[in-house]
Length: 409
Image (cartoon, rainbow, N blue to C red; front, side, top):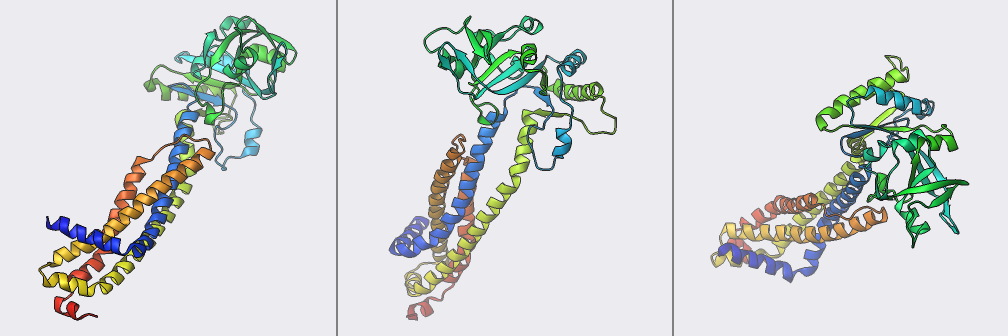
């Protein structure tokens, strides 16, 4: 009951000095706002990256000429001079990885147009020449018809699986399966419509991705582009062993000298996320340091304001002591005032931080989120700052001599 009464007195004192209380909270608001807003943006990006980077299926990795994520330390001149990965490299690797579940190949061509009768897409269509195993490795599935099969690849058939957005545009009111579309003057028979996964690599729309047999791709557009090879296994236990086998096999196939670095890159969902986290670590750390400095400055401000408050309320403290208030009652009163100021400022900072962070993240088309861990950290920081920087003024108030305090003018 005494604690409740003391808390009521503390809150009443804050209400009677609204302007001073508000100005005291500003520093806390700024500090918490900085931490929460940056944490929210990073959490949103992290969520979107995790959803988008997961372009590969489970227990799957990809072998390609180019690094999946650039970190600024690579020798790009050396990377550009790497030999392309060829279809022959793929077939030899597939024969060597007999423990793998699927070994697929894909080759991309961008900026194409597809037409049907009087309808035509924009020249922003992506076409992937693929083998059958590339489909389960990348979680590509046909929602209508079927995907490319081995017979299509062996015979270099002119067949195509349309992306969902392309199918909706060209075949708004009819079934596309079995119809013929044109791409670069070549006719293709539609055998399927793909199920567009949410997102795609870094949120890229997959509805414009279309798939043809890789042999058809090379017959029409040549083999001047490096292909990507995807490999998957059944269990996580086999995963690391297959990566090592694939790396050794590719070095053998491409005749890489024993002491030389790989002239290809291997990436998985996990490795890309690790690289991205390493790249953003500096930004995250800098934001937190700025926020903590702002909170430290706010704490010093609170201590100064509380000391001024103790001086202004010396006579009030003397009266309270004269009518029976103990040292701990005065101590608790001023600590409650300091902690309340910090918590109120922290709550306002959290609300504005979440709003600003989600707004900034939405401009980057990231998924909205609330970083509950940092919200809790923000609340705890407010309490800690209130206790640390409110303790000295509270002790000073509690140790005032009641007689001297009553004489204070």
